[in-house]
Image 1 (cartoon, helix red, strand yellow):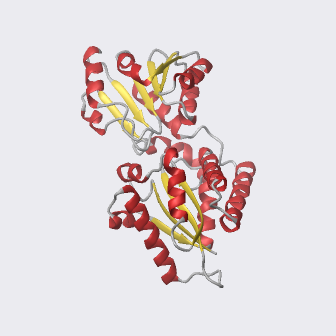
Image 2: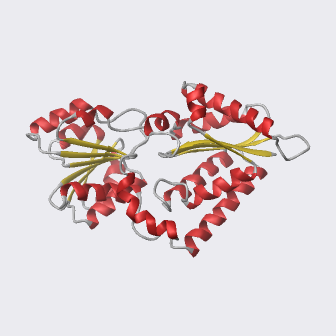
Image 3: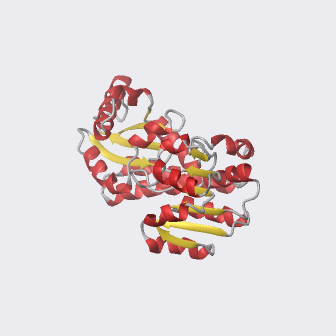
Length: 327
């Protein structure tokens, strides 16, 4: 078998392109089946997070396990064409913003990703769980076998050793922490402000935790499923509401942090403009940690609305990353 990887991440493409190639959880199984149907593809794992989309494949390489450069280029072109066709994108633009690895380089890259060395937030732990989940999905669908299986299991072992034996996981540095740090830079004191959190995943849980540590007392969690919103809210003495309640809650909200798997924006320019008018133009900070984005880009054009995407907050975490880089 020959291993091949095609990927796109925060270092090769901006959020506008990354959100177009993201795979929401409900389409991953279909995508894996399609990839598994490509000629000579024997194994496949699909990783899709807010900062990356990566396709790991094991191709039949004849009697020889090796794959020469010409064959590698052929395999890359096949997968890029499939990815562009699946998402209705220009194949040349996608190829220009992608990276490719073959054989040992695939394993080396997988180890870096699993350890958090290739993340926007160096050493962040969430990617390890996301990689394990992606592998588990492929295993459940029986589209992964010995070749990729061995590579992923080895990467998991290395990631655990790195986190155990080094200080790469120390210091509170994460996208969630950076969002709260950004809010603190803008508002100075957070304890008197009302915060609206949109979503109920791990990132929103971490944001809520950091907000409570900063003394924030008024936190509202909005989600498509009320039980999930209430679950997080109950742990922080907050309030849980449905997404349909957002326009009403927005009027008293000073900070919005959103992170969902929605394929369409949940908060538009009109809603924010209306809320700001009723707030008599009291400033509002909106931090969108989702890919695809939860908040319409046009919201950033509104006076008194300060919108930051996940790409915008990278500078906030630079200092905290330095010590991790040394580790």
